Length: 336
Image (spheres, rainbow, N blue to C red):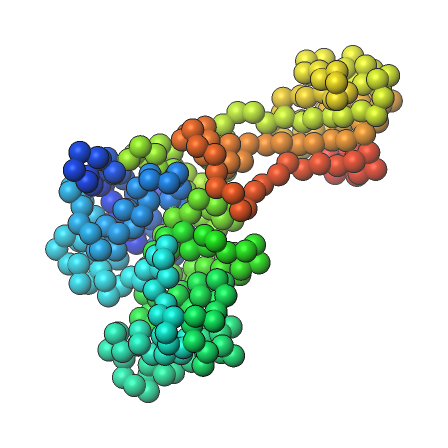
């Protein structure tokens, strides 16, 4: 069902932006339902940050019909600013003052009464597990603490829509997962999150819908599952301990691609339970036990590379599922 403009937190039709002769955004259409996470993926220089800057009123578009929080961006930019929060690639935290002072500064900028500002600052510092560090200079904070403080500062004005521009870049895996939990909590509370990232696992974990931006255009858009189905290449790989088992398996599994050196067979597969069961039943019928079984289904890394020609960013890699001979029997039972 198509969402009406009133049901959308963010709507962009025909968004264009150029810098001199370089076109960064070339007719981009984006539609983000309220209370969801929308992730914009793309290689460096694809225009992700430019899109965020335009939709958050920091720079103007050359063309396009743009609405954020129900307001026309060109006509009501102040109303848009009152409804949004922005956490950019580079932290807005002032290192020279404490975490608490950073929060109180944001409260002053939002014109909150003194008592209310202190209450909101204290609540957010506690929510983001920063109470113990609140009196310390922000310069002493770790990368994860700084990003949590940055996001807490964004929430001082209770925004309905939050733009997160690569919020976990440079964070360690533990801090990244902590940020994911915070984002999930925000969305559960009704906030809309517009997320740009190069970490594909991040989009896979968080986003209700994903768009891939490349060459100034949206080249694919949908749920993570829909995007993965765009790319072929799923397979099951079986490795055998000895040449006799390998040869018998090759005879039993007609159509498998052989690898004589590693004694492995590769069978095209979409990774479904039915397909896996058929392969394992074929081995059972022939009385053969595989030493190792690997299932690979296309993931967002495959989608990203297929659509943009660029590898995904490192830091949150995904991996195929592998079982040893001891676990192959459990895989058979699961498939049944």
